[in-house]
Structure formats: structure tokens, C-alpha cells
Length: 417
Image (cartoon, rainbow, N blue to C red; front, side, top):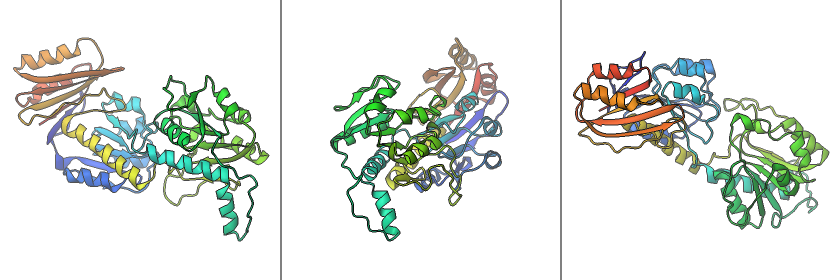
């Protein structure tokens, strides 16, 4: 595969497979690196996350960047990475990436919206049972040499009410499995979601908090979800209820949660995500929730099972490869989605542009004026961006590409041979 990338103010030489440079951070599963190396790409892997300055230094000349949840790809990083074509978030969330800045530069972003759903759900179920039975507390006592064989405060989950805040891929699957275990399920979501099984949608969050014996958060990292669970919401929960956050650290006021646990209003909690998380293995972890009884703290491992990480590594790496090799953007987070099968007898031109009237006609007019025959074409738009893939019968000359790249609406242009 050969590709040429151009923008109005930047162009690269022809990019063969062996020229494609990939940087994978944060212990992304080796299956992703192996897949990309198998395509001939130059792959560098690093264990931890990088700071903004460190990432700017490391990303020079990189075409594909792979991260998880702790590395932040900011406007400043993107401005310093003219060769960057795509970012793979090897996780569900993409709030750590400035999507607007990426879109402005024609950098497509992929994530793994489904691959670790089961892993997060299983952890939630395990923690609900552990908290209800106070297993973590009893295990801690046993390790300290204390034998405390008592049923006090230990309950079955059957017949109790689980309130799910956020009924997306994870929340809805948790709903099904929880119901199979005998829990009554209610949920609250800003969007109109179809209730699965016997689950019931609550009209308000307050309604859910008043009824639930267990509250589990499964929302995304959009700015509007910051601080949605604070002292007011915790106060509205049923006395001696349980609280879980396996979604985003920004959602929960941990200091308020500590106060409610210490007062006895909340009987226990399980938290997997935190407002500030260490960047590297072995760094000290600080939290208001340390040292509390019947509180399970885990280091953002909801999706960290071998099965999930293998699936994520394979899925996101294949999306990055499909974009580099064919221009396909299926399941892109920020660019319009197009998938076109490749024909080895054709050459392909991909064009990210401002979503303005007449751009496609202008592109085709330029190609026609230069005698370029269009064999197949697909256009999609998303918000302020348009994206068109055009297959042509012969290689397009640099003069034609330069004219296309110079259009005022052009964001990024690539020729793939």
C-alpha cells in the first residue's frame, strides 16, 4: 500500500507500509502491536502514559497514535503532529482527546465501544455481591488475624432493587444479568432507551435514588456529567444503600461520598475510576476514599481482562489499518463514516473537507478538467465535516492533488494506491 497525504499547508512524500510509524502507549495489549507490525508498520510501544510535553516530543513523525484513558491528546499536541493521520483510543471513552481539534486537522479517531462491555458488567456484579455480603471487609479482617463469623450486615442481593444511571451498552447489559440474578432493575437515562426484560425507566434521577438499594453509575465522560453525583444526590439515596462508580471519575464528589460512608448513610461503595489517576504503574494513588470499611477501590480495571484487552487491541488496530490502507472510517468517533471495498485495479483519493454546498461538484469538476475518470465514489457528512472517497482508473498527478488540497474547504487529502 502506498499513500500520499496533503493539506493546504502540509504534504508528505509517498507513504509505503514500511514507512508508517505507530506509537502505542499505556500497556495496550500486544495483539494490537503484533497486528500492525504484521502489516509492515514501524511500531513503538511504551508502558505508561505521557504528559503533554512528553507526547509532543514522542509524536514527531508518527502517523498512528494508540492510547488508553490516561494520555491526553490536546489541541497543543495535535498542532505539533502534522503527520498524524489517526488516533486509536483502546478503550470506550474519548473524552481524553480533543475531538474538535482532531476533526479540524482531518485526524480520525476510533475507539472500542463494545469490546469491554462484558468485563465491566461482570466487575459490577461481583462488587454488588461483595458489598452486600461485606466480603472485602471480612477478608481484610482475616488477613489481620481477626475471626469474625457473623451475619450482621450481610445480605443476599435477590429481591433488592438495582438503580442504573446510564442505560447504554454497559448499563443495559448489566440490567439483563442483574435481573437474571433476582434483582429488580430500574434505570435513568437522559435519552429515551428501550427497557430490556422487566427493567423500568424512571422519569427522574430523584425517583431512582429514592427506590434503589444499589446505585450504579454507567455514564460517559461528556463535560455535562462532571459532578453529577455529589452531596445532594448521595443524600437522596436510601439509608444503608450501596454505591458503585465504574464510569468516569469526574462524575462523583469523592469527599462527599466519604462523609456519607462515615456517617453510615451509605453502607458501602465500589469505585473503579477517579478524578485524578496516576499516569504510571507504581505511582502513588491518592483518594478521599482510602482506608474506609466496606469500600472496594480498584485501579480503573473495569475493562482490564485478558479477553477484553485482546478484543480491544484487535478491534482498534484493525480500524486504524483500514483507515490507512483504504480510507475507511466505519465507527469513527469524529469523521463521517464511509466503508468502500478496495479494487486493486483502481487508485483511491480521500478528501476530508468542510461541509459546505457544492464541494463535491467542485472536486469532480477538477478531476474532470484533468481527464481523471471516476470509477466509484461515496460521500458522507457529519456536522461541520464532509468526507468523500473517490476511486479512479489511474494515478492522480501531484498537480491535481495540489489543486484539490488548495480548495478553501479542504482539510486533508490522501491518495491511496
